[in-house]
Amino acid sequence: MYIAKEERYEKMIYNRCGKSGLKLPAFSLGMWHNFGSVNNLENMKKILFTAFDNGITHFDLANNYGPVYGSAESSMGRILKSDLMPYRDEMIISTKAGYDMWKGPYGDGGSRKYLTASLDQSLQRLGLDYVDIFYHHRPDPETPVEETMYALDQIVRSGKALYVGISNYKKEQAKEAYRILKELRTPFIIHQPSYSILNRWIEEDGLKDFLYENGLGCIAFSPLQQGILTGKYLNGIPADSRIGGKKSPYLHEDALKPELLEKVKELNQIAENRGQSLTQMALSWILKDGKVTSVLIGASRPEQILENIRALDNLVFSEEELRRIDEIARG
Image (cartoon, rainbow, N blue to C red; front, top):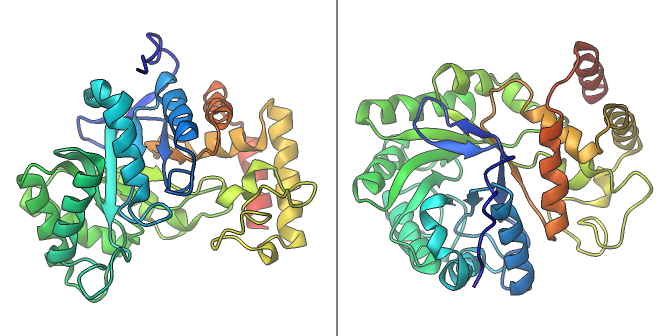
Protein backbone atom coordinates (compact mmCIF):
# COMPACT_ATOMS: atom_id res chain seq x y z
CA MET A 1 0.00 0.00 0.00
CA TYR A 2 1.31 3.42 -0.98
CA ILE A 3 2.00 5.82 1.90
CA ALA A 4 2.37 9.49 0.92
CA LYS A 5 5.34 11.51 2.11
CA GLU A 6 4.72 13.59 5.22
CA GLU A 7 6.46 16.63 3.73
CA ARG A 8 4.43 16.62 0.51
CA TYR A 9 2.98 20.12 1.01
CA GLU A 10 6.19 21.92 1.95
CA LYS A 11 7.42 23.14 -1.45
CA MET A 12 4.35 23.41 -3.69
CA ILE A 13 2.64 26.77 -4.21
CA TYR A 14 -1.18 26.80 -3.97
CA ASN A 15 -3.15 29.52 -5.72
CA ARG A 16 -6.74 30.49 -5.08
CA CYS A 17 -8.94 29.59 -8.05
CA GLY A 18 -10.34 32.99 -8.95
CA LYS A 19 -12.50 34.28 -6.11
CA SER A 20 -13.62 30.82 -5.03
CA GLY A 21 -12.56 29.12 -1.83
CA LEU A 22 -10.71 26.41 -3.76
CA LYS A 23 -6.93 26.41 -4.10
CA LEU A 24 -5.07 24.57 -6.84
CA PRO A 25 -1.40 23.64 -6.95
CA ALA A 26 0.73 25.76 -9.28
CA PHE A 27 1.25 22.56 -11.28
CA SER A 28 -1.51 20.03 -11.91
CA LEU A 29 -1.09 16.63 -13.55
CA GLY A 30 -2.83 16.25 -16.89
CA MET A 31 -3.71 12.67 -17.80
CA TRP A 32 -4.35 13.14 -21.52
CA HIS A 33 -1.39 10.93 -22.50
CA ASN A 34 0.38 8.01 -20.79
CA PHE A 35 -2.56 6.73 -18.70
CA GLY A 36 -4.49 4.72 -21.29
CA SER A 37 -5.04 1.01 -21.74
CA VAL A 38 -1.87 0.86 -23.86
CA ASN A 39 0.31 2.13 -20.99
CA ASN A 40 2.00 0.33 -18.09
CA LEU A 41 0.05 0.43 -14.83
CA GLU A 42 3.11 0.37 -12.58
CA ASN A 43 4.60 3.35 -14.42
CA MET A 44 1.31 5.21 -14.05
CA LYS A 45 1.43 4.59 -10.31
CA LYS A 46 4.98 5.90 -10.07
CA ILE A 47 4.00 9.08 -11.92
CA LEU A 48 0.94 9.67 -9.75
CA PHE A 49 2.74 8.91 -6.49
CA THR A 50 5.66 11.19 -7.41
CA ALA A 51 3.22 13.98 -8.25
CA PHE A 52 1.28 13.62 -5.00
CA ASP A 53 4.44 13.25 -2.91
CA ASN A 54 5.53 16.63 -4.26
CA GLY A 55 2.33 18.53 -3.56
CA ILE A 56 0.46 18.06 -6.83
CA THR A 57 -3.07 17.49 -5.59
CA HIS A 58 -5.01 18.12 -8.81
CA PHE A 59 -5.44 15.36 -11.40
CA ASP A 60 -7.10 16.35 -14.68
CA LEU A 61 -8.98 13.86 -16.86
CA ALA A 62 -11.61 13.77 -19.60
CA ASN A 63 -14.07 11.11 -20.71
CA ASN A 64 -12.15 10.30 -23.91
CA TYR A 65 -8.58 10.38 -22.59
CA GLY A 66 -6.71 7.19 -23.32
CA PRO A 67 -6.28 5.54 -25.67
CA VAL A 68 -8.78 3.89 -25.77
CA TYR A 69 -11.55 6.32 -24.86
CA GLY A 70 -12.35 6.11 -21.17
CA SER A 71 -9.24 4.18 -20.25
CA ALA A 72 -7.42 7.04 -18.47
CA GLU A 73 -10.37 7.33 -16.09
CA SER A 74 -10.40 3.55 -15.67
CA SER A 75 -6.67 3.59 -14.88
CA MET A 76 -7.17 6.35 -12.34
CA GLY A 77 -10.05 4.40 -10.83
CA ARG A 78 -7.88 1.29 -10.41
CA ILE A 79 -5.10 3.28 -8.74
CA LEU A 80 -7.54 5.10 -6.47
CA LYS A 81 -8.99 1.78 -5.36
CA SER A 82 -5.61 0.11 -4.79
CA ASP A 83 -3.62 2.99 -3.28
CA LEU A 84 -4.97 6.53 -3.35
CA MET A 85 -8.47 6.37 -1.89
CA PRO A 86 -7.25 7.12 1.66
CA TYR A 87 -6.13 10.49 0.28
CA ARG A 88 -9.31 11.29 -1.68
CA ASP A 89 -10.15 14.31 0.47
CA GLU A 90 -6.69 15.75 -0.23
CA MET A 91 -7.17 15.48 -3.99
CA ILE A 92 -8.91 17.50 -6.69
CA ILE A 93 -10.11 15.21 -9.46
CA SER A 94 -11.58 16.79 -12.58
CA THR A 95 -13.04 15.39 -15.76
CA LYS A 96 -14.73 16.71 -18.89
CA ALA A 97 -17.18 15.95 -21.67
CA GLY A 98 -17.68 17.70 -24.97
CA TYR A 99 -15.74 15.90 -27.66
CA ASP A 100 -16.74 12.60 -29.25
CA MET A 101 -17.00 9.72 -26.80
CA TRP A 102 -19.41 7.09 -28.14
CA LYS A 103 -21.25 6.38 -31.38
CA GLY A 104 -24.53 7.96 -32.32
CA PRO A 105 -26.07 11.41 -31.84
CA TYR A 106 -25.86 11.45 -28.02
CA GLY A 107 -22.12 10.84 -27.54
CA ASP A 108 -20.75 14.26 -28.45
CA GLY A 109 -21.41 17.98 -28.02
CA GLY A 110 -23.08 19.96 -25.28
CA SER A 111 -26.57 18.56 -24.78
CA ARG A 112 -27.97 17.85 -21.33
CA LYS A 113 -28.37 14.22 -22.43
CA TYR A 114 -24.68 13.83 -23.33
CA LEU A 115 -23.17 15.70 -20.38
CA THR A 116 -25.30 13.91 -17.80
CA ALA A 117 -24.76 10.44 -19.27
CA SER A 118 -21.04 11.04 -19.77
CA LEU A 119 -20.45 12.12 -16.18
CA ASP A 120 -22.34 9.08 -14.90
CA GLN A 121 -20.03 6.88 -16.97
CA SER A 122 -16.95 8.78 -15.78
CA LEU A 123 -17.91 8.34 -12.14
CA GLN A 124 -18.38 4.63 -12.69
CA ARG A 125 -14.94 4.29 -14.29
CA LEU A 126 -13.33 6.35 -11.53
CA GLY A 127 -15.18 4.54 -8.76
CA LEU A 128 -16.27 7.87 -7.25
CA ASP A 129 -19.53 9.43 -6.11
CA TYR A 130 -18.50 12.88 -7.34
CA VAL A 131 -15.72 14.80 -9.09
CA ASP A 132 -14.40 18.08 -7.79
CA ILE A 133 -14.58 19.91 -11.14
CA PHE A 134 -16.62 18.97 -14.19
CA TYR A 135 -15.91 20.82 -17.44
CA HIS A 136 -17.70 21.29 -20.70
CA HIS A 137 -14.73 20.47 -22.92
CA ARG A 138 -15.56 22.69 -25.90
CA PRO A 139 -18.27 25.06 -27.14
CA ASP A 140 -20.94 23.31 -29.20
CA PRO A 141 -22.42 25.53 -31.93
CA GLU A 142 -25.31 23.08 -32.41
CA THR A 143 -26.57 23.27 -28.82
CA PRO A 144 -27.95 26.43 -27.18
CA VAL A 145 -25.43 27.61 -24.60
CA GLU A 146 -28.32 27.91 -22.12
CA GLU A 147 -28.94 24.16 -22.33
CA THR A 148 -25.29 23.35 -21.71
CA MET A 149 -25.03 25.73 -18.76
CA TYR A 150 -28.31 24.52 -17.25
CA ALA A 151 -26.93 20.98 -17.48
CA LEU A 152 -23.76 22.02 -15.62
CA ASP A 153 -25.89 23.70 -12.97
CA GLN A 154 -28.05 20.62 -12.53
CA ILE A 155 -24.96 18.40 -12.28
CA VAL A 156 -23.72 20.43 -9.30
CA ARG A 157 -27.17 20.39 -7.67
CA SER A 158 -27.29 16.61 -8.09
CA GLY A 159 -24.08 16.29 -6.04
CA LYS A 160 -22.06 14.73 -8.86
CA ALA A 161 -19.63 17.68 -9.08
CA LEU A 162 -18.61 20.35 -6.59
CA TYR A 163 -17.62 22.99 -9.17
CA VAL A 164 -17.90 23.43 -12.92
CA GLY A 165 -15.67 24.85 -15.61
CA ILE A 166 -15.37 25.30 -19.34
CA SER A 167 -12.53 24.64 -21.77
CA ASN A 168 -11.58 25.97 -25.21
CA TYR A 169 -14.22 28.75 -25.06
CA LYS A 170 -13.20 32.08 -26.59
CA LYS A 171 -13.78 35.29 -24.66
CA GLU A 172 -17.25 36.13 -26.00
CA GLN A 173 -18.40 32.54 -25.53
CA ALA A 174 -16.99 32.52 -22.00
CA LYS A 175 -18.75 35.81 -21.21
CA GLU A 176 -22.12 34.33 -22.14
CA ALA A 177 -21.46 31.16 -20.13
CA TYR A 178 -20.41 33.30 -17.16
CA ARG A 179 -23.56 35.44 -17.41
CA ILE A 180 -25.88 32.43 -17.35
CA LEU A 181 -24.06 30.58 -14.58
CA LYS A 182 -23.85 33.72 -12.45
CA GLU A 183 -27.61 34.15 -12.70
CA LEU A 184 -28.06 30.49 -11.70
CA ARG A 185 -25.57 30.95 -8.83
CA THR A 186 -23.66 27.92 -10.08
CA PRO A 187 -20.11 27.51 -8.70
CA PHE A 188 -18.42 28.21 -12.05
CA ILE A 189 -14.80 28.78 -11.08
CA ILE A 190 -12.40 27.92 -13.92
CA HIS A 191 -11.57 27.95 -17.63
CA GLN A 192 -9.03 25.63 -19.24
CA PRO A 193 -7.45 27.08 -22.41
CA SER A 194 -4.27 26.25 -24.29
CA TYR A 195 -1.49 28.74 -23.50
CA SER A 196 2.26 28.87 -23.95
CA ILE A 197 5.09 31.22 -24.87
CA LEU A 198 4.41 30.33 -28.51
CA ASN A 199 0.60 30.26 -28.23
CA ARG A 200 -0.77 33.61 -27.02
CA TRP A 201 -4.37 33.42 -28.22
CA ILE A 202 -5.88 34.04 -24.78
CA GLU A 203 -3.97 37.32 -24.59
CA GLU A 204 -4.94 38.41 -28.11
CA ASP A 205 -8.58 37.38 -27.61
CA GLY A 206 -8.82 39.14 -24.24
CA LEU A 207 -9.86 35.92 -22.48
CA LYS A 208 -6.99 35.94 -19.98
CA ASP A 209 -7.84 39.40 -18.68
CA PHE A 210 -11.58 38.68 -18.70
CA LEU A 211 -11.12 35.65 -16.45
CA TYR A 212 -8.86 37.53 -14.04
CA GLU A 213 -11.10 40.60 -13.86
CA ASN A 214 -14.20 38.50 -13.17
CA GLY A 215 -12.71 36.30 -10.48
CA LEU A 216 -12.45 33.13 -12.53
CA GLY A 217 -9.52 30.74 -12.38
CA CYS A 218 -7.41 29.85 -15.41
CA ILE A 219 -5.57 26.56 -15.88
CA ALA A 220 -3.33 26.31 -18.94
CA PHE A 221 -2.92 23.16 -21.03
CA SER A 222 -0.20 22.45 -23.61
CA PRO A 223 2.23 24.83 -21.86
CA LEU A 224 5.17 23.19 -23.64
CA GLN A 225 3.56 23.35 -27.08
CA GLN A 226 3.31 19.56 -27.44
CA GLY A 227 6.94 19.15 -26.42
CA ILE A 228 8.44 21.80 -28.69
CA LEU A 229 9.36 23.92 -25.65
CA THR A 230 11.10 21.07 -23.85
CA GLY A 231 14.25 21.49 -25.89
CA LYS A 232 14.15 17.86 -27.03
CA TYR A 233 14.12 18.93 -30.69
CA LEU A 234 17.12 21.27 -30.52
CA ASN A 235 19.40 18.67 -32.07
CA GLY A 236 17.02 16.67 -34.25
CA ILE A 237 13.99 14.45 -33.68
CA PRO A 238 14.44 11.82 -30.93
CA ALA A 239 13.05 8.37 -31.67
CA ASP A 240 10.92 8.39 -28.50
CA SER A 241 9.36 11.80 -29.14
CA ARG A 242 5.80 12.51 -30.29
CA ILE A 243 7.10 13.43 -33.73
CA GLY A 244 9.50 10.46 -33.79
CA GLY A 245 8.54 6.91 -32.94
CA LYS A 246 5.32 7.76 -31.08
CA LYS A 247 3.77 9.43 -34.15
CA SER A 248 1.34 11.70 -32.35
CA PRO A 249 -1.70 12.77 -34.43
CA TYR A 250 -1.39 16.23 -32.82
CA LEU A 251 2.20 17.04 -33.82
CA HIS A 252 3.90 16.35 -37.13
CA GLU A 253 7.42 16.76 -38.44
CA ASP A 254 6.37 19.54 -40.80
CA ALA A 255 5.48 21.66 -37.73
CA LEU A 256 9.19 21.97 -36.94
CA LYS A 257 9.97 24.63 -39.49
CA PRO A 258 13.49 26.15 -39.43
CA GLU A 259 12.19 29.50 -38.16
CA LEU A 260 10.42 27.76 -35.25
CA LEU A 261 13.55 25.84 -34.31
CA GLU A 262 15.51 29.08 -34.37
CA LYS A 263 13.02 30.60 -31.92
CA VAL A 264 13.36 27.60 -29.64
CA LYS A 265 17.15 27.87 -29.69
CA GLU A 266 17.00 31.56 -28.75
CA LEU A 267 14.52 30.86 -25.95
CA ASN A 268 16.76 28.07 -24.72
CA GLN A 269 19.65 30.54 -24.44
CA ILE A 270 17.54 32.82 -22.22
CA ALA A 271 16.61 29.83 -20.05
CA GLU A 272 20.27 28.85 -19.66
CA ASN A 273 21.12 32.40 -18.61
CA ARG A 274 18.38 32.13 -15.93
CA GLY A 275 19.79 28.83 -14.66
CA GLN A 276 16.75 26.91 -15.92
CA SER A 277 16.00 24.33 -18.55
CA LEU A 278 13.81 25.50 -21.42
CA THR A 279 11.00 23.40 -19.95
CA GLN A 280 11.27 25.10 -16.58
CA MET A 281 11.39 28.59 -18.06
CA ALA A 282 8.36 27.89 -20.28
CA LEU A 283 6.37 26.75 -17.25
CA SER A 284 7.46 29.58 -14.95
CA TRP A 285 6.68 32.14 -17.69
CA ILE A 286 2.98 31.12 -17.60
CA LEU A 287 2.81 31.75 -13.85
CA LYS A 288 4.75 35.02 -13.95
CA ASP A 289 1.92 37.54 -13.51
CA GLY A 290 -0.46 35.72 -11.14
CA LYS A 291 -3.29 35.57 -13.69
CA VAL A 292 -2.98 31.81 -14.29
CA THR A 293 -4.00 29.64 -11.35
CA SER A 294 -2.32 26.40 -12.39
CA VAL A 295 -0.39 24.85 -15.26
CA LEU A 296 -1.16 21.35 -16.52
CA ILE A 297 1.91 19.23 -16.98
CA GLY A 298 2.11 15.77 -18.50
CA ALA A 299 4.63 13.06 -17.80
CA SER A 300 5.67 9.71 -19.24
CA ARG A 301 8.04 9.03 -16.34
CA PRO A 302 8.34 10.27 -12.74
CA GLU A 303 11.58 12.18 -13.35
CA GLN A 304 9.73 14.63 -15.58
CA ILE A 305 7.52 15.63 -12.66
CA LEU A 306 10.57 16.44 -10.55
CA GLU A 307 12.17 18.52 -13.30
CA ASN A 308 8.99 20.43 -14.02
CA ILE A 309 8.25 21.47 -10.46
CA ARG A 310 11.75 22.93 -10.14
CA ALA A 311 10.35 25.77 -12.27
CA LEU A 312 8.98 27.10 -8.97
CA ASP A 313 12.54 27.92 -7.91
CA ASN A 314 12.56 30.93 -10.24
CA LEU A 315 9.25 32.58 -11.16
CA VAL A 316 10.64 36.12 -11.45
CA PHE A 317 11.49 37.60 -14.85
CA SER A 318 13.27 40.86 -15.53
CA GLU A 319 11.66 43.36 -17.89
CA GLU A 320 14.45 42.69 -20.37
CA GLU A 321 13.85 38.93 -20.25
CA LEU A 322 10.13 39.40 -20.85
CA ARG A 323 10.77 41.85 -23.67
CA ARG A 324 13.20 39.48 -25.35
CA ILE A 325 10.92 36.44 -24.93
CA ASP A 326 8.04 38.40 -26.50
CA GLU A 327 10.28 39.53 -29.32
CA ILE A 328 11.39 35.99 -30.11
CA ALA A 329 7.93 34.43 -29.77
CA ARG A 330 6.20 37.01 -31.92
CA GLY A 331 8.93 36.98 -34.55
